[in-house]
Amino acid sequence: MIADTKANSLITALEKIALKPQNLVTGITQDMAANMGLIAKKCFPTAVRVTDRFHIL
Image (cartoon, rainbow, N blue to C red; front, side, top):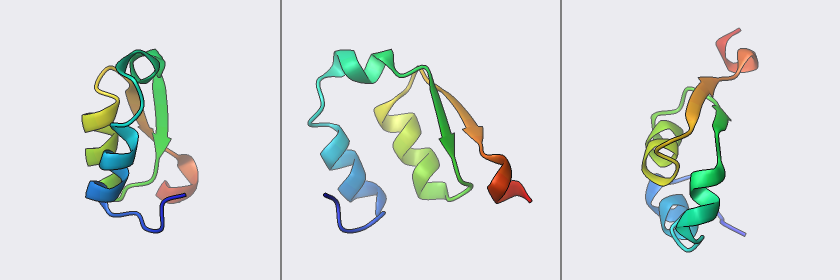
């Protein structure tokens, strides 16, 4: 379990996953927080990122 949503904490945890599973992720639904965009871009560079509708409304 990760105690916070800081980009560095989550990136460190996600980097422990082997690259092949990370490359299998094709899409990510996220909120509009800048740290979540950074995490998605760094850890899942090939995935399409979409801001979920709930956070836009």
